[in-house]
Structure formats: structure tokens, C-alpha cells
Amino acid sequence: MTTTKKKIWNGNVRDAALSILIEINENQAYSNLLLNRTIKKYTIDPKDRGLLTELTYGTLQHRLALDYYLEPFVRGKLDKWVRELLRLSIYQIVFLTKIPPHAVVHEAVEIAKRRGHKRIAPTVNGILRSVLREGVRSIEDIKDDAERISIETSHPKWLIDRWIKQFGKEEALAMAHENNNPARMTARVNSLKSTVDEAISALNSEGIEATAGQVVAESVQTASGSLANTAAFSNGLLTIQDESSMLPVLALDVKPGMKVLDMCAAPGGKTTFIAEKMNDTGEIYAHDLHDHKLALIESNAERLGIKSIQTKSGDSRELTTIYKPASFDRILVDAPCSGLGVIRRKPEIKYNKTEQDLKNLSDIQQQLLEVAYQLIKPDGIIVYSTCTVEYDENEGLVREFLNTHSDLHLTELDGIQSNVPLPIENNMLQVLPQHFGSDGFFVAAFQKKHNS
Ligand SMILES: C[S@@+](CC[C@H](N)C(=O)[O-])C[C@H]1O[C@@H](n2cnc3c(N)ncnc32)[C@H](O)[C@@H]1O
Image (cartoon, rainbow, N blue to C red; front, side, top):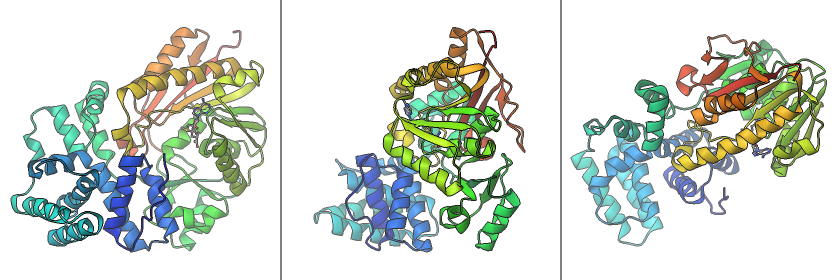
């Protein structure tokens, strides 16, 4: 990812949304990070913040549908930024009924005048006025199911084809639609400092409405307001985390005093939960490839008042050179993955990933698991998790690993106690975003036979 040096905020919400969208498309910026950074850097007020978020995410989430609407009105080639401005404008015209369409056109023309040479503004004006006059074409007219779902939900067709094959047409459609909904705001309560009820009271006293989470006993959820700006957060009562992301740690079933390895740990969302579950006792080794990311784990641990975590950088595929075989009671492999379960938070993922990327990832995932296999004690538990919904990175990979490691079996995921029934089949948990509005996640727990 590159970081922009350009000034994004000039007091105009649409202009800022356009700058962010251009950064995402042209420089592979991450939407959530860039948006949050912009809001923080320029202390954008809550009203503008809401609209900026809506415009940026909406335009990005619906890109393919917006292009489908736009195409009949375009003659010749458009500069990338002009296309992005037209997408942003058509998003407001088609999806945001509260904004008067003529105001949208006026704003777009003003932005075009400020940003482009003098022929651009009339082009933008002409296209948008034609859209208003003639209306946009119907997606219902697309005959092919996969192609229609692809345009309707703005997911590339190769991905929809894969999901239809894997989950069936209805689930693929439901998942693609859910990916265009805003993510729920949830957090994990730090049991070292607070109970869930105390954390809810603390948030209420700061004007944030919070309730217990739906899935995990340690979680809370909120409807609005920024948790990161609360005293409850800075005092270490909370970690902002999706409920699905808490499940791998429950599956790990840690006990106080254990020796635990987290092989892909940064930014430490799961490592710190492990420490909380172990009452900050025992030894927890948190590794990550990227040195600079270790600071995130360390600052999270400090904020939460956790002392039992030691961080180390380096490629975890080489950990057998540091640790002796069979040295850990528990190992978490929260593997690098395609991230197709978190499209709601990072919509650009669906446009940037290719089928080849998925193949490359399963190699590294296997190699990480192989190291965990060497380092786990007999009867110890290895949890493998990803935030994706791809068979090849999840169930397919687990089955292949079991086939080549006959002394391993899958445990029953008994550690996961949930308030709602979970989609566990054959001891593997595959949460899809539409199940309970959380991230898509996969969890499986391996155990090595004692005599191996
Ligand atoms: C899914 S994220 C981990 C999220 C983390 N467990 C949490 O809950 O906060 C995957 C992490 O794996 C790290 N990673 C990628 N390849 C790695 C490797 N070969 N060895 C160690 N870490 C690696 C990435 O830097 C990234 O931080």
C-alpha cells in the first residue's frame, strides 16, 4: 500500500470521497485505513464523517453496478478520475434518494471544473443530465444468473462462479448482498479488567449505547459512536474485534500457565484474547513476519495491562530453527489469507484478488501448518483459522493436511461456547457473513495423537 501525500480534505465531502476513491483504485490504498486516517487527521465533524463514509464505501461497494449504469452514456475514453467522479455521482442519484439529483450534478460539475481542463465539466454535465433524463438500465435484464448476481452485487464474475459452485446460488447471492451492508461494531471485553456488564455501563456513561454481543460471551456490540474514542477503550476495557475473529481463540481452549505460540500474530487481536483467557499467566510467544507490526501487538498488550506476551519478528515457516520439536501446548495459525470474509470492511478486496492469488496462498498456509505440526506437544491443540470463505484455503486445505499427516485428527471445537448455534460441520466451522452479520471466518482444531 502506498500512503498519499496529497491533501484529501478541503472542506468538501464529495471532493474528499473522490480523492479517497482515486487513492484506493490507483495506489492500492486500504479503504478503511485511509478513511479513518482522513477523519482523524482533519477532525472531520460527525455529520460530514457519516456522509464521507457513505459515499466512499457506497461507490466502492457498487462499482460494477455503477459502471453497468454508466456505460450506455459514455462515448470514447474517460480519464480514470472522471470515471470515478461519475461513479460517485451515479451512486448518489441511484442509491441515495435523499440527495436531490440536480444538486448531485451541480456538485460534480464544480468538482470537474476544479480538477480538470475546461472540456471535462461539460462532458460530466452532459453524461449526468442524460442519466437523469433517460434513467439507468435494468440489471434484471441480464439473463445469465452468475453475471446478473455479479453486476447486482458488484462482485467479479469469477468469484460469484466459485461461490455458486461452493455454496449454491442462494447462499452466493446472500453473501454477496451481505458484503455490501455496513459491518456491525463489536468489541471484546478484557476479562482482566472488567465484566461485560461493567463495560456496557462504562460505555453507557459515555453516551454509547451498547448491548451484549450475539455470539461470544465476552463481546459487546454498539449501534453507533466510535468505540476507539472512548475512555473505556483507552483504559483497556475493550479490544475492537469482530465476533467471528474471537472464535479461533475459544477453539484453542487455553488454560492458565500454558506455553502458547501465535505464529501470525499482528496486530495482536487474538494474542491478547489468549492472554486474557489465561489470566495473563504462562508464556505466550507472538510472531509476525513484519517487524513494524510487532509494535501494534505491544501497544495493545500495554493498553490492556497484559505482561505475558513476548513478540518476535521473522518468517514463522522457519520457527523450527528457534524452538525444539513438541514444545508448545497450544499453537494458533491465524494464517495470511485472501480475506474474502471481510469484504464488508475492505470492499476493494473483491476487485484486487485474482484466482491465482488464492492458489499462491494455500502454499504458505500449508507450510505454516507444517511448522505448527512439528512444534506442538502430543495431545496439544493447533488451531488453524482464516478470515476467508474459500474452500481451497479452508476445508480443502485441512483435508489435504489430514491426508498427509495420519497422526492428526480434528477435535470437536468444544472450547467454542456460543449464544447461537454455529455452522460447524465435520468439526470445521465456516461462518459466512450472512449467518449472523459477522465477518466470514474459518476455524478448525487439530490434535496430535499421544504416541506419535
Ligand atoms: C490474518 S493476519 C493475523 C491477524 C492476527 N492474528 C490478529 O488476530 O490480530 C495474518 C498475519 O500474518 C502475518 N504473516 C504473513 N506471512 C507470515 C509468515 N510467513 N510468518 C509470520 N507471519 C506472517 C502477516 O503480517 C499478518 O499480520
